[in-house]
Every structure is written in C-alpha cells, then in structure tokens.
Length: 276
Ligand SMILES: [Zn+2]
Image 1 (spheres, helix red, strand yellow):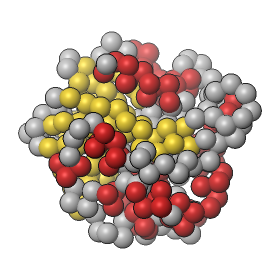
Image 2 (spheres, helix red, strand yellow; image 1 turned 90 degrees about the vertical axis):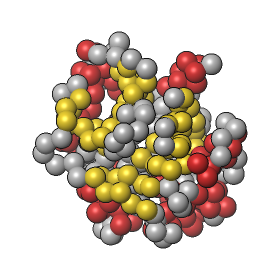
Image 3 (cartoon, protein in one colour; image 1 turned 180 degrees about the vertical axis):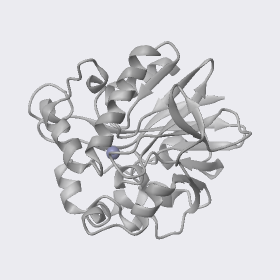
Image 4 (cartoon, helix red, strand yellow; image 1 turned 45 degrees about the horizontal axis):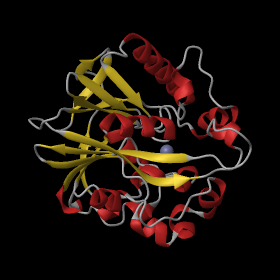
C-alpha cells in the first residue's frame, strides 16, 4: 500500500494572519489536501479538490464570491487528475472516491472521474443534491450533473467504534482499511476518513478544523478563520463538539493516529516530507 498527499486546488485569501496563520496581511496559502491511496481495489481518492472544468470556468462554476473572496488560483495543472498523472499513476484506475463532504472545494474534481464509485454519507448526499437557497453557493450542481455513481452510507446509530468514534467501513475486503468517521457540523453529513497506514492510522478530518493550531489545547485558531467556520457551519454546536473530540484524540493517541485537515499547507508539507 502506498499513500500520497496531493493538493488539488490552491487559494490565496487576503489577510493571511487572520485566515491562514501565515505571517502578514498579504495573501496566505490554503491548499486542498487530498489522499491518493494505492489499494488492493485500484486507486482510492479521498476528497477531490477543484476540477478541470472549474479551472476553465472558475467564476461560473465556483461562483464569483468564492473565486474572488478566497483568491482561487487558476491552475489547470493543480487538479487531482493532473496530480495523479504526475505521480505516474493512471487516473482511469481511480475506482473509489471518498469525499469528506460535497462542498465545491472538495467535490469539484468528481466530474474528472465519472466511472469511480463515490462513497458519501446519506446526510451529505441529501443536502448536496437538493440544496436550499442558502446552500447553493457551497453545493454546485456542476459537480453532480454528470451523475456520479453514488454509494450512500448510513451513519446513524450503531456501527463499529474507532477510538471512541462511530465508524463505517466503506470498502469491505479492501486493503488498506478505509473508514468513514462521521464528524457532522461543518456540513450536515460531514465525515472524517480514516485510512490504515502500517501500524497506525491517518485521519483526514476534512473541514472539521482548518488550521493545525485548532487542535492545540487550548485552541489558537486565526481569528478570521474561526469566525468563518462558525458562520458557514450547518450545525455549529456539533462542529465545536466534534472539534473538541478531535483535540482529545490528538492529545491521547498521537502515537497511533495522525490527523490532517483539508486546508492546512503545513500539514500537507509534513505528509509529503514523511513520504520522502
Ligand atoms: Zn473546504
């Protein structure tokens, strides 16, 4: 098994100190950290970032407020499909996609892999496919119009436990193990994705937190991003509770579980350095 961390999308919002924790008030760096896993059943992609057509028509497909507000960098070579080619792998081998949720900066690459099975939670699928007026800015129909091959997973009561969290095994019989770890709050059906990595685990936390400093005790998130997380949350109480559980997991099990989120470039660089 081999696992690669890639960035499939770059954003450079103004006010670095407040939004990314980078120094100064100029543009900070926000990545879209995705995982490419060489499994016993083809390639598994965790999150997809932004896609080929998003780079061609960013204003229309992502919406002007998102494009401008987050400083989305237009880079046709910075998509998941191109990063996979860059790893020397064949994008046609992507058989499974496991998005943490279906926001535009996580689901944008779905149309680039139309034959892949897309594993989502039932709650996320429901809100993304028929979004409310408020949610239409985050769930973009362009990303679903091709008719993804959904595999919808129920995440209600029951299921196995994983370090005290509920878990759902999405690829039975496949090596490595890939688990959904429901972490609702940022969006209705938001989930972490745990991947067995040797004797330990890598938990991709999606947007359950945005900056590694939020996992510290006490958390020290850049002020702007902390406010943004609260505003965008589908359920802010659930989001805060899950973030606290992740903080406890990170503190108690750092020898067994590595945590990364989708947008912290320092975490991405750390994973790449590990792989070298
Ligand atoms: Zn995001």
